[in-house]
Structure formats: structure tokens, C-alpha cells
Image 1 (tube, chains in turn green, orange):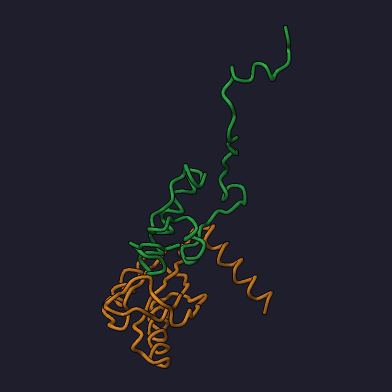
Image 2 (image 1 turned 180 degrees about the horizontal axis):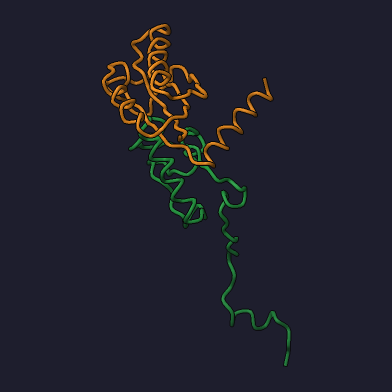
Length: 89
Length: 112
């Protein structure tokens, strides 16, 4: 009997794309306050329709996601970000 | 005493002097009512992300002040009554926000 691991590789699921570990960029950088006046940065947390990107895509922690959502809503009120858009990026 | 930050948008039909006069009016209102204006920033004429009152641009101005909570309501009423103001937003600054604003100012001062 061969003990070469190559012979039994198909018994295990083939790893096509190893998922990278998600992390919260704000926690990692130690950011405590998310500025609503910085529209360029908030745009990076919106999709091209101007909607807030979900946590499952950005990896933001729940606590910081609330702050992000508030900041984006404030920026929209001040016409720094659009409420509705098409082809923002 | 709390610290507040107000951003307001003035109509683009004003001249530079008229815009400055409007800002002066609200600074005076705050000063008369026992608030201390700590910082102000003029963002100039900016393009709006969507039209407000059929205008696509506006003069942005930021005022940071320290005051008791009672004067914020009347101050906002004053902003609503003024035809030259299209939009405004007042936020109470928490300690992280204050630290952020202070850090930004220190950085600007260091560069200058």
C-alpha cells in the first residue's frame, strides 16, 4: 500500500480558492470615529448604486458597521453622497 | 456644556461677501447666546450630489462650538427661517469625534 498523500487527494474536497481571513479595517487601524464629511472614503463602502456595502463583503465589525451606516446617512443629508445613483463607480 | 458641530449649505446665488455676511450672522447669534465658537471652516462652492431647491451647487460652511443643549433648538430654528440656508446638520461631538477634529487641526497646523 502506498502512503503517498497524492493518491488520496480526491477523497478530500479540492481546495480551489483558499478564503482569506476577513478582518475589520477600523478595529485593526484603531479608528474610533468615522467621519461623515469624508465623502471619498465613504464612497469606498458603497456599491455603485450608492447603497451601503454589507458586512459580509467589507468584513467590518458590527459596532463599526453601525457607525459607517450613520456616517453615510449624514453625508447623504448634506448632499455629499447621493441617495440614489447609477454607475457611481 | 457640550460640543457641537454644524455644517450648513448656503444658496449659490449669493456673492462671496453675502455668504460671509450670512456666516457672520450665525456666529453672532451663537456668541450672543452664550456659545463659544471654537473653529470654523469654509469649504467654498461645492457641487451637490443631488439638486436641492433646484440648485446643483452650494456654499458649505462648518462651525464648531461649545454650548449648553438648550440653545441648539433655537439656533436650528434660526437656520430654518433664513432663506439663504438650503440644508444644515448639527451633530453633538462625542469624545472620539473631538479627538478626531483636534488631530485634524493639529495636522493642518503642522503642515502650515
